[in-house]
Image 1 (cartoon, helix red, strand yellow):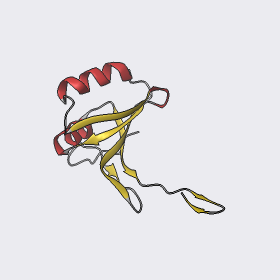
Image 2 (cartoon, one colour):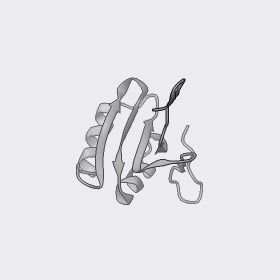
Image 3 (cartoon, one colour):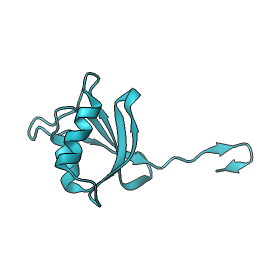
Length: 100
C-alpha cells in the first residue's frame, strides 16, 4: 500500500541508495488499477514533453518508468492509483573479470 504522508496526503518518494539517474523514477500502481485507463488519464493531465517522458511500461507488474519534472511528480504523488514512486537507482554489474 502507498506510504502517504498524513499531513500532505502525498506519496513519499523512495530514495535510491547510492547513485541515481537524475530526474528518472519508477512508478508502481495498485494491484487492481486499470493501467491502460490510468496511462490515458496521466497523458492527458501531463502531456509528453520535457516534464513527462515515459520510458518503459511493465503492465504485468503494474509499473512504468520515466523522466518526470516537479509538476508531474506532484501529480503522480497525489494520484490515488499510485502505490509507490522510487528514484531510479544506478546499478553496476560485476562479473569474474571486473565491472560492466
